[in-house]
Structures are given as C-alpha cells and as structure tokens.
Amino acid sequence: MSVMNADIYKDQYRVLHGKMPMFGTGVEESLEPIPEADFHRPVGHRTIAQLIGHMVVWRRNTALRLQRLPRPRIELGSPEDWPDYAHKTKAEMLDELDETRQLMLDVLDAFDFDTLEDKLQPDYYYHYRHAIDGAIQHDVYHLGQINLIASILHSS
Image (cartoon, rainbow, N blue to C red; front, side, top):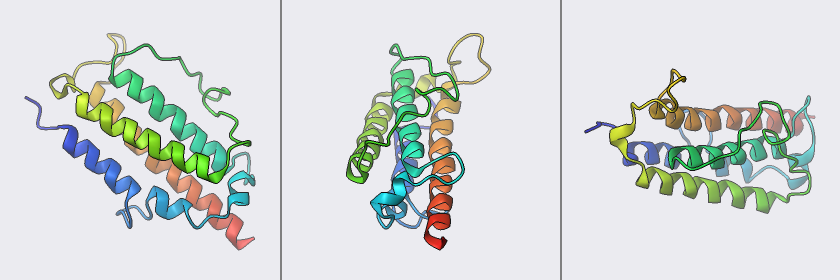
C-alpha cells in the first residue's frame, strides 16, 4: 500500500486554489483582482488568457492519463498546447479553472494509488507519481508567470 494517497494530492490543489499558499498567492486570489482586459494584453509573447488555456488543456490531458483513457497527443508549442483563448471572458476562464480543479480532485479520488510507482509507458522513465506531481508543479509554475504578467501590466 502506498503512503501517498488522494488526500495528500487533493490537499495540494486546495493550497493551489486557496489563499496565501507558501509560494505566493493562490489561483483565485491571483486572478480576481486582474482587470478583464489585462487577461488579453500580451507581455512578450504570452497573455494571461493563453496561460490559463494552457493550464486547462494540460489538466484535462492529465486527468485522461490518470484514468488510463485515450487522450490526444499534444505537440509542445502547438495550438493544442497553447489554445486560443482570445474569445473567452474572465468569468469563462475562471469557470474552466474551477471545473478542471474539480476534475483533478475527482480523478485523484478514483486513482489506484497502489499503481503510483508504475511507469506511464514501458519506454518512459517516469511514473504516475511524476505525472501527478508534475501536474501540480505545472500549475504553480504558470501561476507565477500569470502573476508576473499581471505585475508588469499593473506597473505600466
């Protein structure tokens, strides 16, 4: 029996979406004060909307992977990796983040943690544990980018 379980990973999503996590501000805490127009204003080659779309795509893809269901192969840097969220409203983006947060919580509840150290595929070096940890780290990484973009936009 694995020491890791759904509650440990679900708690990380609660922290990610909660107030004042150790790494800065949580998802909603970060996004709520950002004006809607700023979601679509580029800084460099990215917008907050693009980063949210990217996070949503990868949460959905990871959920399928953890359920061992067929999933689309996402080519890094492709339109599937970075979907066009220019038409989305702030409310729609926040709803999608909440929907995919709940999806990940549900998938973690159903995941067989006795298989946590199984390889994703025989040719891969990483295990399901890496996929779950990586999904959470991916969100924290991009949340940092979102906060950086918001800070730059606010100061300009």
